[in-house]
Image 1 (cartoon, one colour):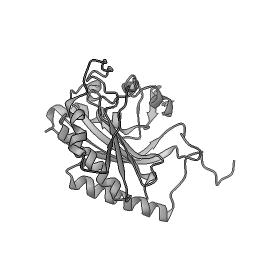
Image 2 (image 1 turned 135 degrees about the vertical axis):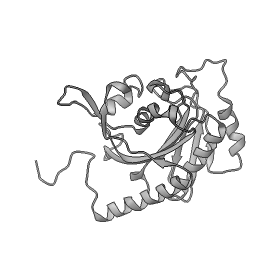
Image 3 (image 1 turned 45 degrees about the horizontal axis):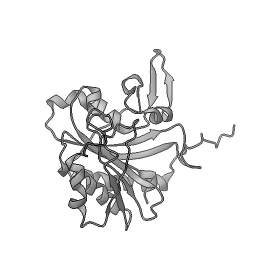
Image 4 (image 1 turned 90 degrees about the vertical axis):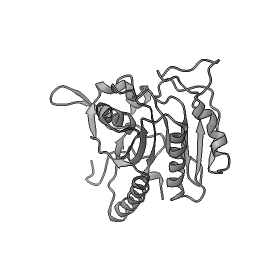
Length: 255
């Protein structure tokens, strides 16, 4: 094996690319801190067991797992959101809610969804925890749009009720109505051309999302540069009953 090769989907960042990434990070951090978000730092590996039945089959399939020296099954970080919930849940009873946090770092995934895509991706995300209101939904949608607009002239946010689920994670039946916060969003955002509502019939049964979902696009609209949504039952999986909404941007997709 040549000394210049790296595993598929992994590569170093040299001087210019590193400087570019740090500039992007700085712009993100300024926007997030300016909106009252505080940073948390998460480990790159964790035990696999706490996430069993939480992240879904696809996420588990994408995760690199191995047995450590103590015989414990551990996984390299492939999704920030469940890790944030696991880390913060024990502290929520003593915290003043709602809590606004952001995070940044690499995620490593087993398979690339497109030819030449990175397995190692640098992401920055943010969450509001402990606020189930439509105001929190609007705040996160508008913040995601504002961040995207820093990098793209015609950023677009597509949002849906996600084929919404009940708070216990089960899909709602045909006679149920989506949460009022989701129903009211189109009227609250109708005068902002950056937002488009899209109806979705069915929820993903393997997802931890429980209602509102959204995707952020840059100018070319080919693939989302960020995604997010509401996951009101996720924290209960780790012992804390708290609604939450958040988003994550993949920095590799930004200019």
